[in-house]
Length: 255
Ligand SMILES: C[S@@+](CC[C@H](N)C(=O)[O-])C[C@H]1O[C@@H](n2cnc3c(N)ncnc32)[C@H](O)[C@@H]1O
Image (tube, rainbow, N blue to C red; front, side, top):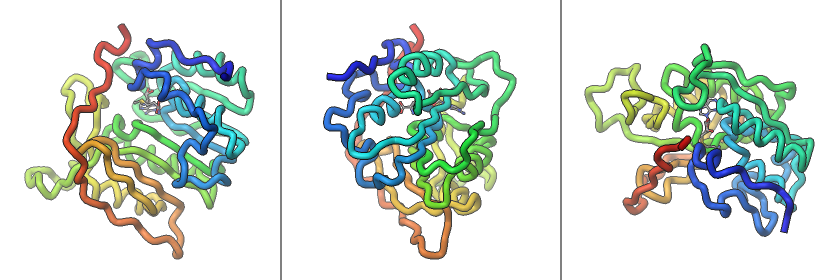
């Protein structure tokens, strides 16, 4: 048993899965297992950390010590809870509000994009779970470039994406690379052309070194990248041959 609190249900609903098991790490394993070696847990930037789901798992990790963790999110309530409850457990874990507009979670902000404010620009792991699945195309390059800027030279950038193949959509302009599912709030889900995503990683000095296709067809792809260097080999995109299924987030999120 551990004494680390679980986030309240209201906050868990704002990030997706609500079951306790998503917040646990019963065996103290490396949270990102074999894709992220133990040495890369020394300083972690968690972009869109929500109410500290990954932070809580990292706090329970016994296989490698986390030297420093910074989580940022646009939802101030999640950040306040995490700072009050998780930083108490380990002061090396910190949470900061990232003040950008979101119709539901930060409606008063005047900014659509803001730089990632950190005192440390040498994170050995930058992780973004289900965040680029909410960033609209005109902000994408800024955020990719920011993630690259704060990485150490041996750093890993771990991010999940919804992807499609634009080759099947002949009406899309060269400047149009993202599909949206909600006309009232385009950040609800953003689905990117996979070739465009690869070209943006290249443009911003990152090489995709490993790709894990979705477990349910069309759901989250997991991409691992490193700062580009001559020795790195770019991973090819596999086909998405996962079984069909439904993976809807909770409805009526803040009720
Ligand atoms: C689906 S949740 C995932 C939360 C967390 N990464 C996890 O795995 O539990 C997406 C989170 O990203 C945050 N988010 C989306 N766009 C963001 C942005 N531009 N800047 C900061 N946070 C953002 C949302 O507020 C939300 O908490």
